[in-house]
Length: 290
Image (cartoon, rainbow, N blue to C red; front, side, top):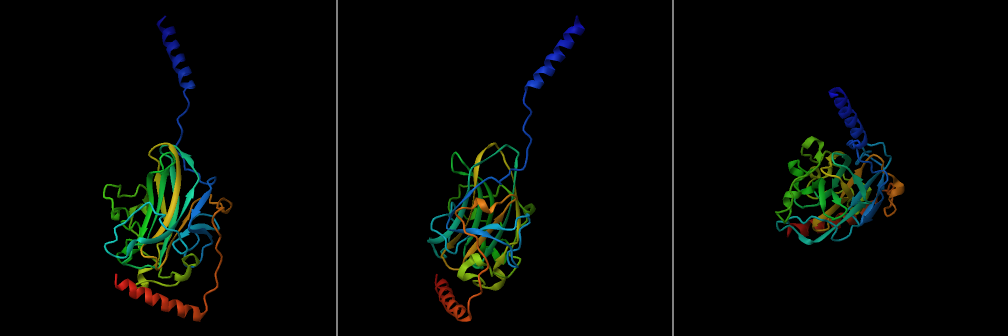
């Protein structure tokens, strides 16, 4: 009788476990199906000698640029410390469609920040995960700031610590290149998305360039529906542009209906460069009086 009772309990336990659905396994989040909308200057471009081909297998990657950007695109307001006018900013964003993720799922992205603004002015870039239901920041995935270029801390650049609102989170939620600070590793700024400032640098040549491709790895703390936002902004004035390149496995050109692909632009004639140089000298002088 006792044996039969034990066997019955075992049988009931096996049946009960069979009826409980298996727990979902953590997995990389696929972004291949998301579509993108742009505000400002954005597009797709192939790698070159300044911004090299990304670590993914994609032939093109995305970018946002302050050249040709729009006003009031950033979710961040940084302290200006008297340098420039916080209202005189412009930039661009790209926003993904909504996707779902489970707790412990992972998200892997790569970014490359490019700036002609050198040190002293706060051009900055960001990437964030946004809760679809609340439109509030769920996680900060990447930040960069040009003003720290001379100190080798372009990425993450202490962007979140420079917010005007000290009550907001001031740390990244993603891990960038195992947590190391990253400065500019190339002096060149010759890159089409930088527009008329391509090839130039404010202050000194060794404080401009690209950060190189940087991995951003994030693990979801909770399940939910989310979207991504990547952006870059001039902060303090609109001179000397910056851009943010981004990529991920599965990026599809067909899913960028609002962005324009950029090809190779012929180098300006020497006379055009001379005129641009005179204009830049005027802007440098006006900056010196801020």
